[in-house]
Structure formats: C-alpha cells, structure tokens
Length: 326
Image (cartoon, rainbow, N blue to C red; front, side):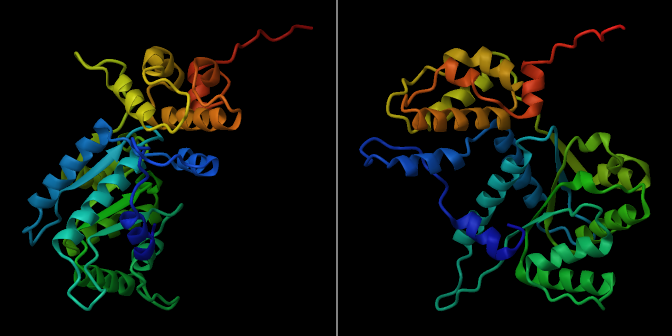
C-alpha cells in the first residue's frame, strides 16, 4: 500500500462483509478465507481518529504560511495501523465521490498518501519513500533537496490532502541522520498543503518529543492514545460490545449467538483488552471450528489456542522456579 496503485486498490476494494440472511451458503474454502482476513469492526479508536482527522483537515484547509496542525496516534503495538488505514480509506472514498474523474478520463486527484518510515531512515531515504508513493523518478545522483522539491511539487499538483506516516517511532532525532529526517518532515508539512497523521509505538516516551525538535512537534501535533479497551467505562462495556460485533460477523453453521459475550471477563483477561489479540483469537478459533467440523466456538476452543507472546505472558505468566543449589 505504500504506492498510489497499491493504496488505490486497497481503498476501492469493498471490505469483507459478514453473511446476511438469505445469502447463499459459502463454501468451506470461502469461509476459511473470510475468517483469515475477517472484518474490521468499528472501534472507539477508529471513531475518535476519524473525528479528529476530519476536524484537522477542515482546520488547515485554508492555512497558507505555516504547517497545518497534525496528529500522532500512539500506544502499544496493536490496533493503530488498522485504525489509520480505515480512516484513510474513508477519506479516499469521500473525496473521490465528491470529485470524480472528468468524463473520458481515468486520471483523478490523489487525496491520500500512506508511507512507512524505513528502519534507520535518513532524510534522503525518507524523501525517496515519498517519491516512490507517486512514482516520481529518483536517480542516485539526485540530492535530497532535489528529491524534496520534486515531492513537494508533485504532491501539490496531485492534490494530496491527507498524508499517513506509519512507524514514526523509528525516527530518533538524537542521532544526526534522525535529526535530519525529522527536519525533512517539518519542511514537508510547511510545503505540502496536507494534514499529516503519524502513528508509532509509545511515541510520547521516545526521543521524538524531547529537545528542540520534539518541542516543535509537540507544539503542532495532537496526541491520541490507542490503548487496550477497558472491560467497563462508566455504564458501558466497550470490550463486550466489541466481542458481540465480532461474534455477529462469524460465518459458522452451529455457533449460537450470545455465547462469546458471556465469556467477556475471560476474554478480557486472556487478551489484556488488546483489540489485535482479540481479533486474532476469534479468527483462529473460527478457522479451528471449521477445520474440526464443530462449527462453533466454545471456551474450550479458545483455551486451546496459542496467542501472541505479549498476550500469553499477560494471561499465562510463567512460573519461575527457584534455581537449584549444588
């Protein structure tokens, strides 16, 4: 998805839909493929991010002389990219519906760009990633300044309005190359008329928010934390609601609705409230139920599944035995 063609394919491909009443039964292979990818459930994080992005894009629409306000999505290593991509897809589709390509032409504006910060990014490699997204030719003889100028000109001409930058925690402004890459991002935010949204793991605890450069970023960017879902929030039960939504999306022939929400406490303890861990657990359990012919998910099914290491360490901590003495 880090090229325009890849992003356009992602954004315009209809998302998977759960089975509807009256639909013809899917084959076993179709149902396995469906649960392997599964649906994206609209979570509180996605709703919050969508509202913030829309507001910031309106806020910066007519801003001319300084960098537009930006947004940083931070938190543990789960759920942020999914939320970012879903908001980007929504923005892309809304823009293309409002501004369709002229009759007889396939060319249209490019409303959204999605990029990954490469490991050990320098200013030049980061600028090259921006160029690669829109297929801007780059040669080894080009300087960083030349690549940056080409990027700013092309992104402006293409009408890019939202730039999503993932893995921002890979930048370390305390190093010379990291500082230059951070300065490049600052330069791009001032020269491209777009709203920048960054995601990274526990960004507030990284060097990105320290020193002079960190103060500049913190002064321009709002921060949204995508953490684990609580079992309860006031009078609501957001984690149980998420379980219910995921259960309703299952395509199993013998699963009784309402089974999984009854295990909400167990599932919250098992996944530490992490959306990514819950989604993986549900997908694996559904695939297991199809393969073994039970066609339903029970607590026994869930118990037999090995989850990601972080979730397993939380729910099934190792027993540390005392060292033997000679």
